[in-house]
Length: 142
Image (cartoon, rainbow, N blue to C red; front, side, top):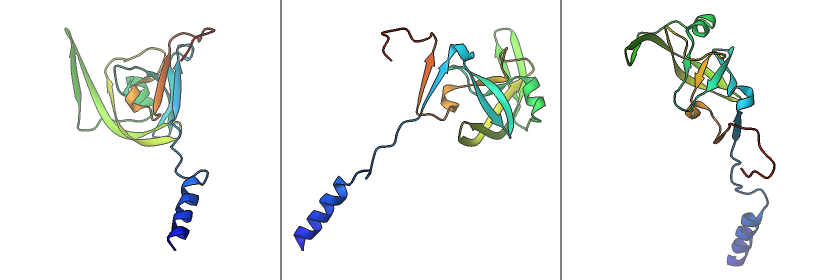
C-alpha cells in the first residue's frame, strides 16, 4: 500500500502543468508614445501620462468631461508660493483588463499637458513596468 501511495505522489509531482509558477505581467511605457496609457474612469476613456513621482491626478477639464464631482474630501496643496485647491472622488478605474476603485484628485490647474492627467507606477496593474526612455539600440541588453 505504501508503494502505491508513493508512486501516486511521484506521478502527481511530475505531472506537466502541475503547480507552474505564474507568468509575470509586463508593461513597457515608451517615450515614443509620450508615456501615455489608455484607461477608463467610470467607463469614460482617458489618456493618462505615466509619472513615477505622482499618483492619479486629473486635469480639471477631464474631471468635468467624465462627470466627476468633488466629494467631501477636498484638497489643498502649497508648492512654494503657489496654493492649489482641488477636489477628489472615488471612481472605477480600468487599466487593461484590471479594474478597481481609486481616489482621483484634480486641482484648479492642469497637472499635465498633452494628456488628461497622470498615473503613478503603483497604479499600473502589471507586475513589471519598464520605462523606455530611448528606442532600443542594437546590442543593448534589457
